Length: 102
Image (cartoon, rainbow, N blue to C red; front, side, top):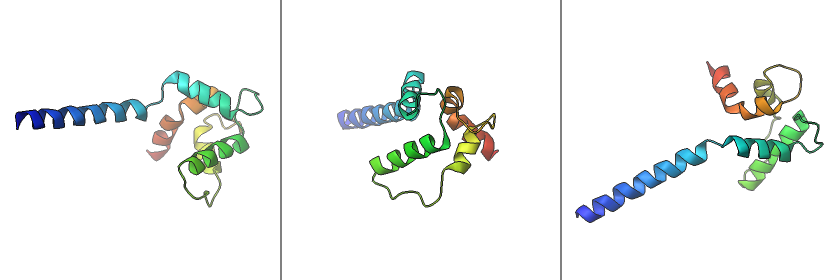
């Protein structure tokens, strides 16, 4: 009985740890992802590059294409409102979503 409880607790803690590690991208992963998305290699992401990235994620997760466009989310992330996403804006994209919700 004690052995089963210990196994259950250990499994639960392992799942929690795995989830929290995967929920936050490491900075290097974000930079590598940015470089991959920046198809024209100009050091910034256009709305088109961002939309292509988002659609690729939807396709990978076997979801239907988005009915709208991604301009609203793009504008939330584009904190300096210059029409492009810098590496820093892209890295901080989750924070920008939280700020806009306040």
